[in-house]
Length: 389
Ligand code: PLP
Image (cartoon, rainbow, N blue to C red; front, top):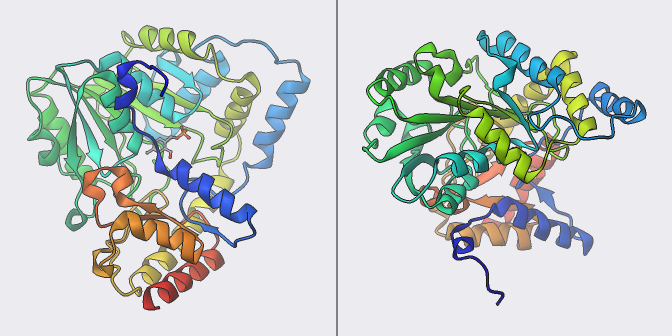
């Protein structure tokens, strides 16, 4: 084995990419695979966004941009936050990054070190725990439970704060559970945080526009009493079906942004220029494609939840947001990871074991319903056949 830095043994990974690779191999062998594993919209990026990138290339935008992003894009982000959340931020607080994930890494590098505790949702996006460990900090899980609709309560978070807590990562609506925290609970949490003025919040709101049954997004930026210690993580990947473009943004407290920008300079210099022009078109252009996509996800959500609840051994609560269902599959008597493998290898259905999202994910599977209703129904039929065989 190569001799590498000891810290490399602390870094985790994202199983969804392993499953994606295996599903690709099986498909290349001629197997018919339905991919409910990877978390990405099955829609194309809207044409006017693609066109804006092509135009930027034709217009000669081929060089470096400022590390924090082109000014017009940072302004478009500020205007979008004003429009959606009703909060005025300074475009100078915005950092354009190559995907929402990069913000997590930067946050861990900026705040994490040995002796420090960082809280994160579990089951949650696997990169949270991975980057916290990589930073040397101690990860403190906030357990998300099925009986609470996978939403954390204010008490779940506040009761875990210690003198060592420096940062709390939150995510609502959530991956992998679809849980969405109601406003009353966020209000209580913010009230409690006033007793802990040195704790910073990273709020991952990348699914903030994917909420169902009339739920409203509650942004951590909407609370003026803590705004000077909130880092907002968001981006274009999910909202505009742009996962492969690698474009995200974060909003930082003014005093922290220069440090985050320094990481960007050390790491990637700037985001691909044409992609940034596409980002402007996405935010300033028509939003009907976004609404149509969310409507389609909502329809599929109803289909998948009802179908999952008809599979013997499965039990699924209704997700409030994002595009994931997270059924409890303990009733099958098959270990979660093994069920993931069998569904892919024997039924041609790619899903992700709940344990990939942390220890509290044991007994669950994540299904992404960013796929056609027809494929979802076919996948469910295959699973029923496999489990009844
Ligand atoms: N945050 C959450 C909760 C996610 O589920 C994802 C992607 O799956 C991301 C952030 C990262 O998105 P990006 O593709 O912009 O890096």
